[in-house]
Picture 1 (cartoon, rainbow, N blue to C red):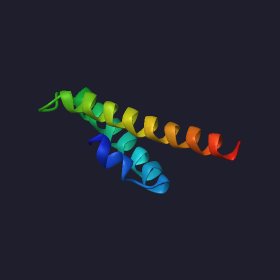
Picture 2 (tube, rainbow, N blue to C red):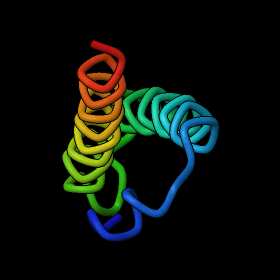
Picture 3 (spheres, helix red, strand yellow):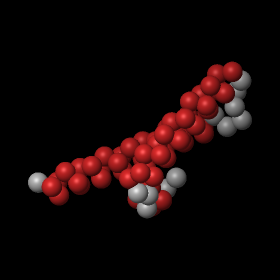
Amino acid sequence: MKNSEITGLSQEELVVRIAEERENLVKLKFAHTISAIENPTRINKVRKDIARLNTEMTKRKAASTSETK
């Protein structure tokens, strides 16, 4: 997921997307533990996507608190 796609999401969509990606990460880790998955770099990609989503959410929260002051 690219940053341009992330910035186009609304706050609610960000929350939903983070939950989906976290669930996906748990499933990938579980599948990799049981038997090696075809592409183990997908785990890193999902982790980075979650971090990007969390970063965007933090930016928005910081911007909203600075606007109210």
